[in-house]
Image 1 (cartoon, one colour):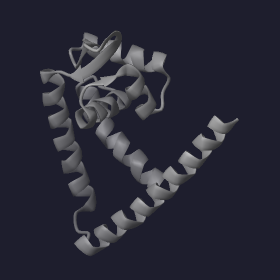
Image 2 (image 1 turned 90 degrees about the horizontal axis):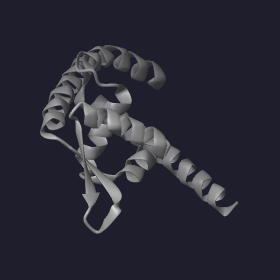
Image 3 (image 1 turned 180 degrees about the vertical axis):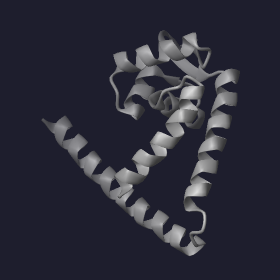
Image 4 (image 1 turned 90 degrees about the vertical axis):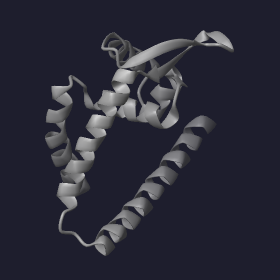
Length: 143
């Protein structure tokens, strides 16, 4: 059921992303940078669970579009930091507003109590997934 909801939401929201020539992974990168601020390429790749070379290619494309800026880390000039630009701040604000409007329409007519219960259940499922992921990660590191 969750997969159906996610897929349907993506298909509807995909049109909005295409209008702005932004892919879903790029949208996720923008949201991550908004939440985390300036980060290293490796930090973003780890957060998005993609390889550093894949993240670098995506970042380069976003820099070319004016959505990201690269700076050298003042404490280590070998390290590149990436950050949002004014253009990406405005774009992200617009996309998030559209996403929120879409979600409001999806949940229209549902009671607050029912939505809160759903959020609690999904939170519990998310925590369980996270625990399993951390266990597996620890097991891989021990090998």
